Length: 177
Image (cartoon, rainbow, N blue to C red):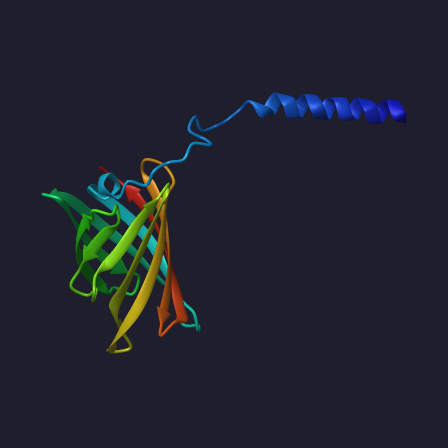
């Protein structure tokens, strides 16, 4: 019995040691910088879902994005198509500030947006006017984007109204060019 337990422990140790040096990603363990300017310049596609906090239908959508440099600005055009057929557009003008943060403006973003790169993540905070059952609501968005690799980034947005959670949005971005 003792000999079987010793043999099993030895076999387990050999198996564990043989797997220790294998890494499927040569960049595993390295901190990937988000780099907003390079990621959002070019063509991208995104897929997302809107999850209301208090029930209701989950809305799916796709987004076609085109970003370009205009002087010190990044101009980002977003074209949304929701699963119910609704279409929306948003046109951002984004610029890095002297303190390293990012400032963005769009016509339906009162007061603009403020963002900060933090390693492989990017936080993006803004209010957005949304059409909710025929009326315009000012909703606070607190986005966290995470750079996964050279092509993929994930975004998780938390939505509040008067500080009360009203929904969440999850988006997967893929850089095409």
